[in-house]
Amino acid sequence: MEKVGTLDKKTVISELTQGKELANELKKQLYPIMTSPEACGLVDKILSSYDNALSLINCMALLGNENLFSPNSLQGSPRSEGKTSPRWSEQVRVCSGPGLDGQVNDAYNWRKYGQKDILGANHPRAYYRCTHRHTQGCLATKQVQKMDDDPSIFEVIYKGNHSCIQQRLKKKEEKTERYEAGLGEVKIQEVHSKEESHPFISFPSTPVESETVEAHIFPELLNFSKPNYSPQLLSPATSESYLTQSPCLVNDFWPETISHSTPLGEDLDFLIDQEDFESNFIDISDYLP
DNA sequence: TATATTTGACCGTT
DNA sequence: AACGGTCAAATATA
Image (cartoon, rainbow, N blue to C red; front, top):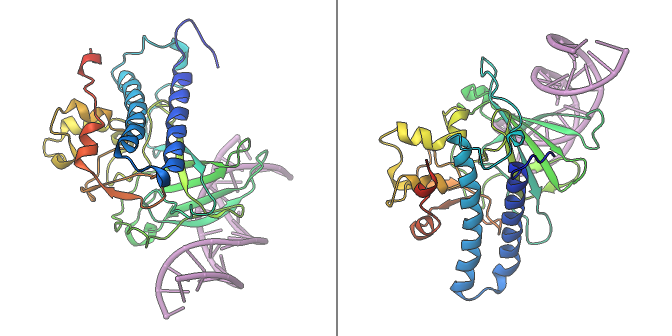
C-alpha cells in the first residue's frame, strides 16, 4: 500500500477496525467474569470510540473532506451505476467453538444454490440466493468464500438489493446458516466491509428493505430526505448524532430493531437501549465543514 | 410433507 | 476450451 506524505486512510481504517475487533474479543472474554457495571461500560465506551472514529472517517469521505489523507489512498473511482445491480463485499471472521454455537446470519433468509471450486483459490465458493426469490421475486444473492490466507475469515459478496419482505427472525429460533468446508454452524463477525465505488464506506450487513445501495452508503442523506424517518431511532439530541452510529438504521420493516452481531452470539436482533444509544454518540458537528 | 442442501450438468463469456 | 455462475434432480433434514 502506498503512503504519499500524509496519513494513509486504508491503514487508519484497518487499524481502527482491528482495534474494534480486539475490543469486541476482550468483551467476549471478560463478559462472564465482569461483575461491575463500570467495567461493562468501559468496554462499551471503547467500542463506541472505535465506531465514532470510523464514522468520522466515513463522514469526511462523504463530505469530500479527504485532505487528511493521501490522495492515493482512495482507490477506485465511482462506477457508473448504469443497469448493473449493486454489489459489495464484506469480510467476516468466524468465531466457532464451544459455547459459541451462535447464529450466523445477516438477518436475511438465504438458500444455497451452488458451489464451485475457484481457480487459484484454496476454498470453494458457495452461492446463495434469497429464499423469497420465487415467492416474491427477490433477486438478491450472495457468495461466500473462505479467504486464502486466513480460513477463519469469510469474504461475503452481496449482489443486488432485497425487494422482499422478510419475516423478522426470532431469537434462538431462527435458522442458522451453514457455511461450507465442514464448518457447519458458525458465528460470524464483521471484519471489514467494502463496496466497489466506495471502498471506505463501511457497510452494514443489516437488511435494508426496499432501499437502494446508496441508502447503505449514505444513510444520513436518506435521513435528511425523509422527514418522517424512523424518529424513534434517532437520538433526541441532534440529527448529526445519527451519523456516528455504524449500523445502518434505515429499516422500514423492523423499526424497533437493528441487526447486530453480538459478542455473545445471543441474538442477532436486539431492542435498542435508549441509554446506550445516546451514550454512544458524539457530536461531530465541530468536525463538519 | 415441505423445505433446504448437494452436486453434476448446463450455459454464457472470455 | 476453460472458467464462473446457475439450474435442477437427487438427497437430506425438520
